[in-house]
Image (cartoon, rainbow, N blue to C red):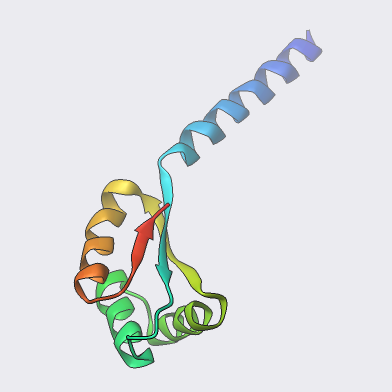
Length: 95
């Protein structure tokens, strides 16, 4: 009986983890040669509600690594953020 109970519990945990992560996406921002550091920082603060320090760190990662995940969450929450970032002239995608 204990073996069955343990197996059932593990199966339920696996199912809950799959359901919980299914809807979460990454909002990725990509580097370019056009936008200034200040513009990207200000956009992340305004759109993603980042602190100035968080926006600056993301901007450094974007510059040196070529991209950075600036926000995680459900697609419906990330979509307006991506649109606002793109309207600011910055390349962003939801993955």
